[in-house]
Length: 256
Image (cartoon, rainbow, N blue to C red; front, side):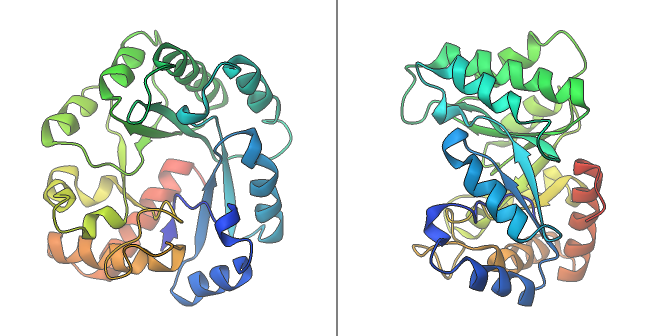
């Protein structure tokens, strides 16, 4: 199994990161993808990757909630690092208006620019979308060229949202611990999405699956997510593991 969205480089893991990685290995995790947040997290992400070079890969981008008054400088600094290391995706990037819509236009501009980075580098995009699907679709509409491959990370939208997104491409959808939450109804979306378009993720340290909800999340909990998907789709956990591993390899254009 592959955790396609893990933030184990954040300070929540500073005291036991090695143990967390060992837990993941013992749980059957073959690889972790580490998406960046912003320039404040960049060094920690790189340091974690360098500590586990064969076990982790990195994605580079500017998170929408980090788009503020200095967003142009932040964006320039982010792009300047693409030649420093190998990145398997641009991300995580997108639109987040849940807490604050002050920088709505700036988020849209930053997202559009980072889509262009991905298209020019032939990289896929990890999209963070929270109360921002209208804006993401507006950016897609104005992109003016073929969109790069995308995954909608932590997808929890409606069926109509799913259909709307699919008008732009046969994209992937990241499914995490929210699928185990009783009233989230993410499991209702699994069949319409289809196993061949699902990527497993944790978004750790956030969105911890049941029965550990409320505690720090970690990549070792991926099997709990896989089990819920298997139960909902009526397939084996082994099939979920095999298909989602293949999906990850196809999406990131990398043999993990």
